[in-house]
Length: 145
Image (cartoon, rainbow, N blue to C red; front, side, top):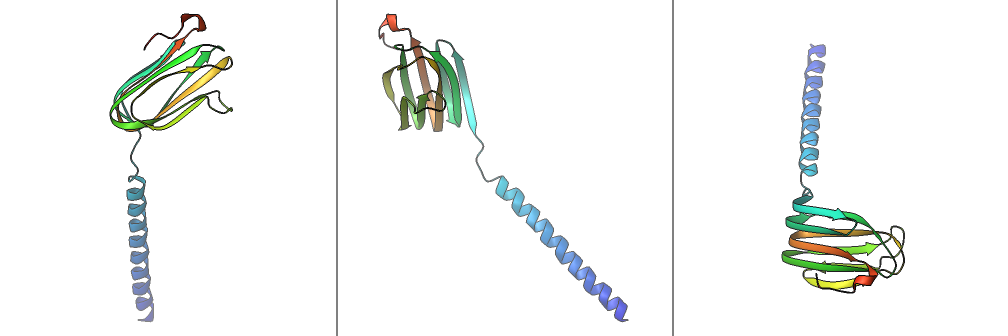
């Protein structure tokens, strides 16, 4: 009789342990699904002459590396109808030559201080619009984008 009582107690503990474990797994699964996935819906092109994106949704970081020479200009145009973006332009491992946060619409040029490969980083925050980085050799002046 005592043996039967012990088995009954063990079964209850086993069921509670199993139920707690299943509950724990369910909570973990729910929590890992709570983060919003990074999203990009649009077109993206990069090459030696620039970096261009048009997007219906930009909610992540996009980067491109451009070989630039001292004295060249990088023309930048940011146009949005929704959201904003953070932009960084610089050589990896060095202070950026440009850093802008929460930008919605802007148009400007950056003069390249020294030759090398520059990384352009654009991080969108529920953004919709376009962004253009056009490389202009030093001899071409500054035509509009």
